[in-house]
Length: 348
Image 1 (cartoon, one colour):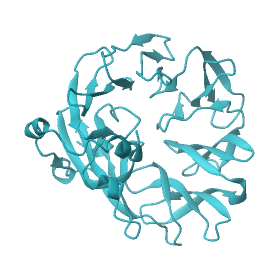
Image 2: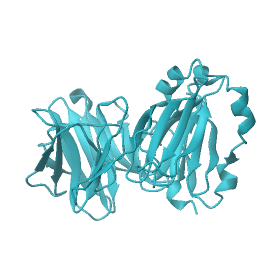
Image 3: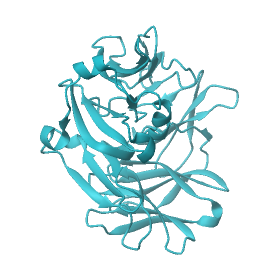
């Protein structure tokens, strides 16, 4: 659930029940809990004054994302370095209503979908001395996107994604990053990719996941379904979102087989990231406060599964995203808008 949706859902939940207040201890600020983690802050605009929107991170200070040209005639795909310099990877005319979607990084490879009036195509480029931007394929099928960092995956030497099958079901598609024929595997039901080689069903089910499937071995793992609440899974953890007896949100984690179940947060907490337990360790969520409906921001927190502890990332965050192990959020108003990053891969 995104922050805007979370604020709408939490409009009536701004007062945390007294019992929950009594149980809760104040979370440790990230700077104290993880002093060695790499972090950065950056202006929301580039040196030419255009607004920059990160799409994926290489590290806390380097990202790939989009910005319009100064004259507004093109939308640019850029790599923004730690020193603020940018390198243009690709540019599309604004008249074609372009968008760059599902940016993903694997080693020296940057890949993405680009959509224009002409349709959807898969593209790739080298980040260093690799090949220039090139079209991988226009045979993308009816590709499906779930705001997940695994909407496009590079694994086993191939780029992989899912599409809706014409007669129902799901197509698991794969192609070499240099191009060539697209492999299509059709499976019944509606599925989305997780970290390779896993995928999960339940995408069209309000109760959530029922099965995890290994696309290499073909093995299915049944998800232990709770009696109430919606469940979403990674290969390692499942997140359960339900309501407690007082009508307040409860967020829990458990292993897919139902083991190791424990509460992450309650009260006015809300999920913010589609992907469950990033890096098999960090569950990101927000807590909606009294000013959230006015500011659009909320307290940003991370539950660390190894220690069962909660860390405060920011008391007043917006525009939260997590890509390639790097958590990003914004602070400030439109006039003082600043983005911040924390590389969760560097947390000891």
